[in-house]
Image 1 (tube, one colour):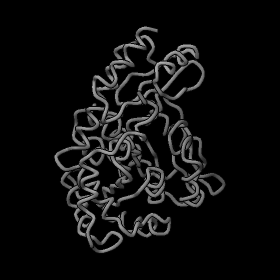
Image 2 (cartoon, rainbow, N blue to C red):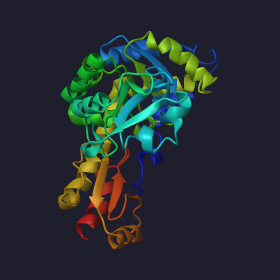
Image 3 (cartoon, rainbow, N blue to C red):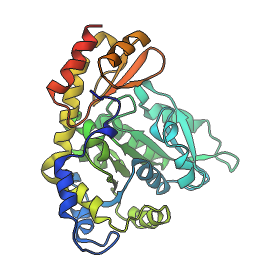
Length: 333
């Protein structure tokens, strides 16, 4: 009955088991056997030589990624409604020691090479103005839209041309890949992404996210920054265990597919109410205050999203019988 956030979903049983299995004596911090397996395991997943750093929160993952791409006097181009701008309490500036977020617009919280180019063209190349050094995109976006491989590649091309780093906030990366039906590499390393914040907590994890560096050398300095930021957990094996369990036999992808399928059931119940196409596990619908009250009186929980609209989020554990009552209630309004 609760559809306000996939952050509130249960931890997947296989992840709980992996944590329990890791509960033995091993080397501290990231020197343990499980942490040492991450690079090879994720390199196989991404068909590319990568370095992986575990992080306990999505905010820290995004911000540490940005510190790898910008200096304090530089800027990061991102959408005006990007999570790093709207929902991280100024953490990017805190972690980067002052780098500026340079905001652009775009339908469904997506940005394009044109919007990036237009912004950069207004910046004088002198010390009086902040120079862009990176671009950050979210896949799936804050409105549940998915960047296709060709869209990411086009952004990768302009980043390469302008010598900008490219970061992908993948809090719902699994949902995006599940929709696209492509390989993880198609929408990251092959498309020019330098560093990915690979989200697992929203997809059935407890407290583990992965920073994936497609140039492993970039991770060397990031490890020092992780320690300085207070995110080098002494028992990091419990985070590594979660990440390895997720990619084992594509659990991350199965979970994302289940959440996406549940979202489609709700979307199909009232297509005329949709504010955005449903391409992942978030549904944004037109909903009056009285209609919202009616749904809540039936026991359903969700976010109001500005006046006259609402956000519903499905999770890995939602089955058809879990979401069909909500779909029926919306259809009956």
